[in-house]
Image (cartoon, rainbow, N blue to C red):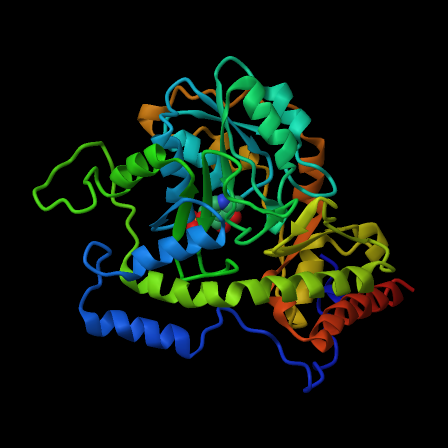
Length: 406
Ligand SMILES: Cc1ncc(COP(=O)(O)O)c(C=O)c1O
């Protein structure tokens, strides 16, 4: 590590520039939380906040049914379980995603098959999906990466042609649109996460959407240890688990949902401004948006970083410099099959026969895993002065590291 470079800290931020904070809340979260507290109905089975949130979130996404859940990981596991995907089945997933997209099939004793992502949009490549299909393939989990919808036209065509189920992983994409249609109803299920960093949050939480009454009924049973909605006599109709959301997070989510459309607009506006400001910076290449995308929620502002244009400062050092200078930033997800857990085959004993070795070449994902950096979405909720500040910090770091080369 080049010490002289890594210690570089720029001047103090101008006091007129306000750093946006996350999570955000106001009197609405407080009112709704207090409402639950004082009602003494803290459980979804006797309160009304989870039911109301499910109704409103489904309406917002133009879906028929929603089930609020403990988190997005459980939402993926529940969707696969409801579709009966399990032993001997293969599920196609993008190579670059958060690990849960790939572990959910394993939890259901199925095999995740990672395929390559588009080098511009960072979403799964439809042609790569088609190439990976075998007689064992049962489902595709396209991830709307960082809030950018995948090419749902092609993915739906492929699913139809090969009779595959689609579970949209919309953990980053609450309110995103593909060709003016809200994501969430292109397949059998869509899943969402409300974890602390997500664009609407209650700390931990998740949801599934579906348009099928049959799938909704089955998923409801599984998420509630097999019990129907108003059961009082310990009727367990299915093997299930407990993935129920409590009334408190649902209260917070009702308030978060009210704010989401405006925040999505602001992030889109600011992402464009930042794209333009960074255009002239050699060595920084932001994720681009497919022109058919009508709303990109920008959960992460992702960009390639080329260390050669920054005097050899590594990506990790550059991220450190951004953080030292008040711009929170992170490195990209690894390729799912390159995580220690996958490489070492550390599966539960009952899963030990899963063969994850049938993996295509993943050149784009390899580049992303090595070169991509991301900034959290809430930075895009700042005012224009703050967005200019982000670009100016990047430019100043570049100037300083280039001078230090002389
Ligand atoms: C693409 C993706 N899918 C699924 C999840 C899992 O969501 P959760 O953290 O709520 O379990 C995440 C979380 O970061 C994610 O990024």
